[in-house]
Image 1 (tube, rainbow, N blue to C red):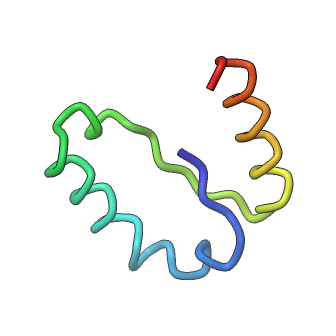
Image 2: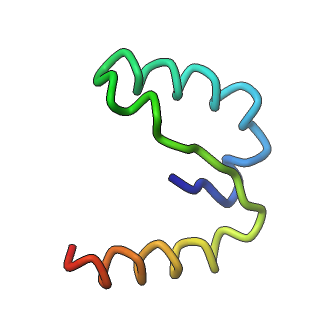
Length: 56
């Protein structure tokens, strides 16, 4: 899962509790890769493209 935009400035505060919460909610999510990208606009488009190609 890729995060971009203004949330990246707060990632050190948000990232660890988010990962912990996801893993607590569903242990399968513990293997989910969370990453931060400074360029949020391109990342949103790339995410939409991946979703569309998977038949989302």
